[in-house]
Structure formats: C-alpha cells, structure tokens
Length: 360
Image 1 (cartoon, rainbow, N blue to C red):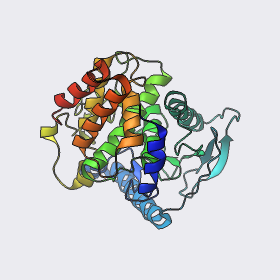
Image 2 (cartoon, one colour):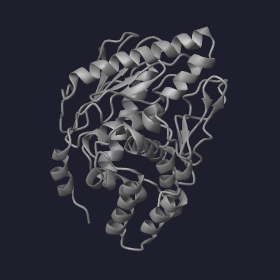
Image 3 (cartoon, rainbow, N blue to C red):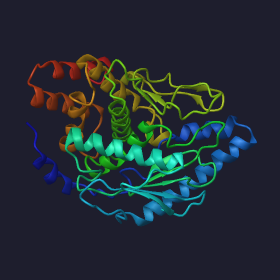
Image 4 (cartoon, rainbow, N blue to C red):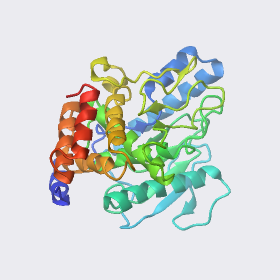
C-alpha cells in the first residue's frame, strides 16, 4: 500500500509555487476565445478581447509574485468569499466567511458551496486537508471585472467572472468548474505538472477528473447516472452545446458558430501535435479524460471510491512534473495493483482503459 510518507519526501523536489506549473489556469481555453474574436459580432469580440487582456495582465502579476503565498493555512475548512464588484482588484470586499449566513447573491453562495463540496471530496474520501493538505484557506472572488468570460485559479485563490450573458453564464454556475479550478491547486502542491505538452494536458485532465467527481459526489451519482460533462449550464441559451468538455465523448461537447467545435480527441493517435494552447493542454486532455471515464465505467459504482482513489494517489505520490501520458498510464496501473491486487478487477479496468485510448 502506498503511504503518505512518499508524498512528504517527494514534495520537496519541486517548487510548488513555480508559475510554469500553471501560469494562470483558466477554464475557458484560448482557442475558444480566439474563435469568438474571429467569428463573433462587435460586442462579442469586445468581451473576448477584454477577457484576454485581463487574463494576460493577471498572468503578468502572477509571475511577478512567483513563489509568494497569500492565502493562509488554517488547519481546517475555511471558506472566504469576496466581491470584486466588477473591478479587478483582488480579493475585493468580504461578503461571506466560513459558517456565515447565506447571501442574497447566488454567485456568492455557489462559490461557497462549490468550495465546500470540493473540500469535502478531498477530505472525506482522500483524507486530504484542503488544497495544500495543510488546511489552506479557500478564498474566492466573485463578480470579477465586467462581463468577464472566465474563471481561474491564480495560485492562491479562485476568481470568477459573471459571463457576458450571450455566450456564457456566470462562472460559479457549474460546481464541476469550481472543482476543476481548485484541483489545479492540488496539482500545484503535488505532482506540479508543467503546463506544457503532455504534462500540461495531464494537469488539465486531473482537474477535469476531480471536478467531475466533485459534481458526482455532490449529486450522489454513480457512473451510470453521471453526465460526465465539464461545465454543463455554463453555456448561455442559444449556444449550440452541452458543456465545455465531455469525458464520455471527447470532441462532442459543443459545435457552435461563435465558439467553434470541440477539438478534443479521445485517441492518442489523433492527438494535437501543434504549438497552440501550450502544445494542446486543453485539447489533448481529452485522451486521459476518456481513459478515466472508461476505467470508471468498467469498475462501476461510485467513481470516486476506487478509480478516483487510484488517480488521486498517482497524482499525490507517483507522478513528477514532466510526466507524460505513458508514465501516467503505467503509474495508475501500478497503483491499482498496489491498492487492490495484481490482476484485480480495478487494475484490469485501468489497463483496459489506457489500451482503449491507445496510450499503451
């Protein structure tokens, strides 16, 4: 059995605040914003350009602060929600703290509840104490900037835009988006996967996987009941799409004139080999995403109980910052064997899944 001792020893080998681990982890991929700029009307292009500008400016500030940690570790669940009031100064005005009264502002409550569901998944299922495993305070800012079409983890806290209303709804609306972005923080403190190429795609995939598990557990859904979508509800009425990504069927989440078509492959032979999107971090994440889905479906039951545990321990104890798909596949197979036995149903499910997507 793999113990936490492996993690505590390995954690010293990479800088958890290295901005190259995830310079600024946004839920909306750059190729989607580019498509809006090219094909949207004047109003849409303005929103997209402003979102891109704001994100780039924040990325610069993030790289300046580098290894500086702003959020405190409290040793227990501590959610703190702020309101930027359409400004760009973080964190903003304090509007709800841990145990505080429910707000009249739905975005405040969604950010609070989503952070709680994420904390609970990691704490109750994986015995993890918040993002850093030391009780890091879970800070979030809502109503960031004006008609800001994104949400991101900046290395210290969550930030949510309100969307523009025509393409995107408010970014707190999807609990799996919240779980996704907070998981980027977990990746930051554990494997520290470099945000480029296959390691970057693994970074995005782990965020999608655990974002989906946050939603599934909050709804008490088994693998058959889950929709396996990331960002369902985020796309505004009239947009032709169900979500941002699909673990069940990568490449089918949306197909819209303004947003473009979901480019994710499900097979390794069809992976993106270009230089855009950090070498395909949001595109090629469809491959390990689909592997997780296949393994979970093969194992059955609640995905967070066995296959989720395999993925979590692999992230926590085994992977290094420049891991690729092959290393991740072999690592999850080995962890499954250590947890549940060689040739167990769980190990067989994981092996078959990686074979099905063509990684091994």
